[in-house]
Image (cartoon, rainbow, N blue to C red; front, side, top):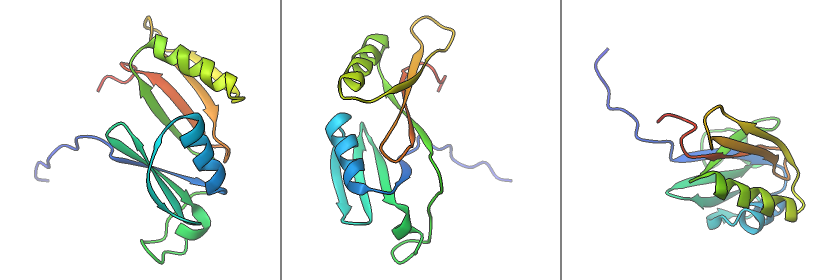
Length: 136
């Protein structure tokens, strides 16, 4: 097999929800992500640093009228990265003050390498991680 160019990064992460309004209130209101665009009743596109979080209403994307059919059943998982443990603590305090339950706090073995887990309104597991957890 010929050598192929290496991928640079994941540009889009897609999640599926059952209520786009609740998702927008959570991701834009609580997490402060910027709305790039979206189509009512179908999808919502949010900026995360230089990447995009795609929020789909699975019932619509499974129809395949715009793109090939796609969707998922049940909660998924993705992680958002912050620079350091102090930033993680600020996010944890903000989430708790916003009524979001932090399900788990993890210490990944090296000083300062920590993460927290919580759920969005659709039940997707969101993680906030400190830079350096993944050696990439």
